Image (cartoon, helix red, strand yellow):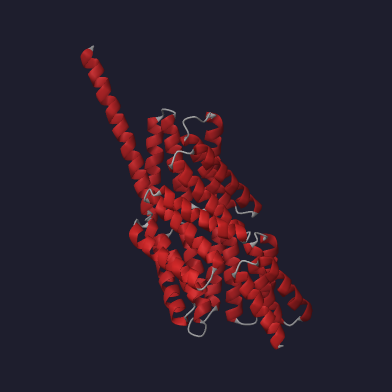
Length: 389
């Protein structure tokens, strides 16, 4: 009926606004009234996305598989398949995510259903970026951008622009990335996409931090945090906490940084997000290593570093592998093992070059340069001491 369709549209609007519990309530009423495949496909797909946003991954997977099972067209199978791929991505199973999204892309006719095809291409790009494969991500991003722009879907278009800004930042094109992110923020504010606005504020905070503007970065992150807190959106809350931890660490406020990192770990654990939990744990370890006042348990730090590195390698999380190698090099250098530190930095640089990840490549080059300058300084001091003797 028209009334039921209006209820369904309301549920989707509530979901876009971050009101996931009310979304589920409206969909529950619809589910009690309809048992046809047409309705079950739509109800379970919408439920799956809301449950995913709430971090209830097992329930989300069940709902999305029911949506897929009740899909009787390539378009609807592609929609459910894309959401299943996103779910696997956020749980850290990137290989499964890539398999699922390629199946979804094969299901949909891009000429008949450009928006569905664009969503699938955008999701593929996001998975490739998580795996650190920048260059292969560019083509699906461009396809998604063209399709969404032509369809007039501002929300989806902003999502693609945001992901493209991420690519620009990783390639070291920070000014262009910031300009594009501010465009995304303006679009999301205009269409009143609150959770998208929160995500954009946090993205901007990360980029502004790279410029060394701690005050503006903190202001942006806190704004994003507040919106996410108002909507109880724990994924964006965790991201904001991680950025605030990075800002505090850069500003040498280590106790504050560790508190933010601890909260990010807790939030990732509550949502069963191993990749996000690993990122926050690596950051917490970096804070402990950076803090000159912290009591360092060498054996414990060694074990934690190796565990995080091994987990990132097994999940195919290449950017996190490189970050772990850089941190291990820094820790080894602090322990006086310059040979092992150099090897760790060199391995990080080689992997960053393979990924075309300029930010990580520059970090590894700077680490190697600092190491060689330090060793050169030590050699000069030794020579001077020998001459005096």
